Amino acid sequence: MLTQASRRIRPHILRIVAFCVIFLVTLWLLRRAFDQPIAEPLAPVPVEDDLKDIHNRTLGFEKIFVVNRPARTDRRDAMTLAAAFTDLNLSWISAVSGDQVLDLTIPLDKEPANPPRSGDKGGWRSHLHAIHAVVEQRLTTALIMEDDLDWDIRLRDQLRTFALSTRALLQPLSILLADRADPTFPQHDDTREIVNISFSDLPETARPRTSLYGDHWDVLWLGHCRMEYPSVFDEAYSLGRVVQSNDPTVPSRNYMHGEWESAKFTDDYPDHTRVTHHAKLPLCSHAYAITQRAARVILFELSIERYTDPFDVSLAQLCEGQRGPERKLTCITTQPALFKHWKPRGWVNSASDIANLRDEWKDVAGSEIIRWSVGVNMERLVRGETGDWIDQYPDTGDEEEEEEDKVQVTEPDSNQAEKGYFITRRN
Ligand SMILES: *[C@@H]1O[C@H](CO)[C@@H](O)[C@H](O)[C@H]1NC(C)=O
Ligand SMILES: *[C@@H]1O[C@H](CO)[C@@H](O)[C@H](O)[C@H]1NC(C)=O
Ligand SMILES: *[C@@H]1O[C@H](CO)[C@@H](O)[C@H](O)[C@H]1NC(C)=O
Image (spheres, rainbow, N blue to C red):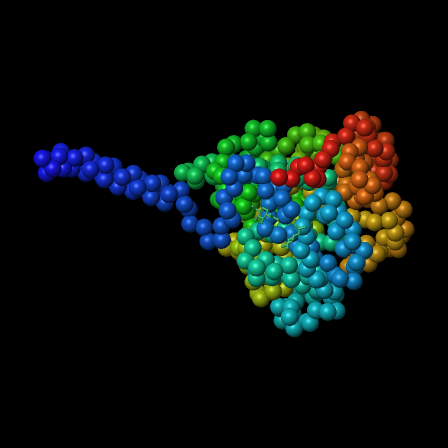
């Protein structure tokens, strides 16, 4: 009886076992197919909205470092307040001045073409201190900022659209295919025209695994004082751009005059356009995010290999592959920049330790390009106000008026009662 029953059951058991085995093998194969090998340590893959970490205190990076010379307590106080009101957690890096840098620590050529000036030495070493920290702490990504910056109250909204744009430029269209929306990345093909991807029609891309800004970047150059974009003739570049129309955080073009960003930027695009693209000829390392891989490359190239130029120029050379194509970093930027130099009220030369600017009294504090400036709105923030933000570059529809407004802080506009950018926007 019993053996007969077991004989009847045996085929079923075999089938179930075979099914389980096939199921597990399929699962294992699928996992293998989906798991591309990644050298960097993995950040946890976010569930639900995978952009939600932009709302955390480090803007979706692992840390935010601010390079600050401890003697510049004024800047540290201003940044600490701005960070408190925009809910950022800053980690301070002690910057050094040029005379604190030992010449023998600088990997100069025998007869350097551009021997570093004192300020360049300080800037070089201070940024390398921050990059050293990224390597030492094995951070997957970090944002490095200088200590005299201003940004828009809507920074997190800007970063959200920026992250979607970098993904469109860099991520494959799906986990199974290597194809990208920009067919010129990573291999440039100089027969192609510039690829314009519209922000309002972004392609679906594979969900990134290492950073919510995408898997295939090295540097996100978020704060610059000048930037160009690649043209069809630049062989070292990929050509894709993401074009976002009607970005309310972008001032109209008559405020820009091509002085602040690339001159072509204002010629090529209508008012309130933001363009996210591969960096070309960037200037000023106000704020940039780097990955662990990039941090290692930069520390090696600039501290061990060779000092050739000031820090921002050297970083630009790495972005452009000028130190050799195998050392090229993938650097993405956005125009206009998201971080700009904050110019406090006072004597102009106190705004910079490096440049020998003419002594000039500045009556009104401000920054270029940043519309709902945290710095300009600081007094309102301190008073606990949550709307009616002062717009440094309001649309008036009148070009001459806008030209005059450029230097003035304007009255708050009641349409801007946009509340709760700080506390409620966080998760
Ligand atoms: C913010 O998000 C990033 C990416 O998920 C994460 O690495 C980082 O630790 C988070 N920061 C904070 C303060 O939670
Ligand atoms: C900022 O981050 C550090 C660790 O990096 C943590 O110890 C500290 O509590 C954080 N501060 C806030 C206000 O989140
Ligand atoms: C993309 O936009 C740029 C700037 O407006 C233009 O020069 C270029 O021809 C465009 N490319 C295509 C394929 O339309």
